[in-house]
Length: 145
Image (cartoon, rainbow, N blue to C red; front, side, top):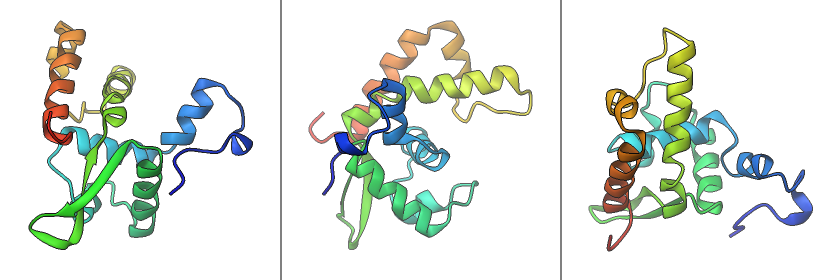
């Protein structure tokens, strides 16, 4: 399994360019959003999001996110024919980026909603919110945490 973009395949070593290689499209960010803010863990549940991701795109993005070690999959203990998807520590650490994107768009577009229920807590204590949410994500997604 390919773990990251090979040095010869990189456009540059710019940190933003490299980050975009790992998560650089809307579908990947929406999958991460769902894993962070919902209980969606299966392929079918992730596909049921209101943005209506096509099956081939979902499959491709899950592979890319796994290759870049942002998510991991494991067999569903209730149905060994399917997989459940979980954030890795690397994926969990994207939480502030996802929240900042939500807040930025909510600020500049009155039609945008903050996809998560923590908008007030963000304004009151951003660092505390991140710490609390990251702790919860680690408990929910990382084995033995």
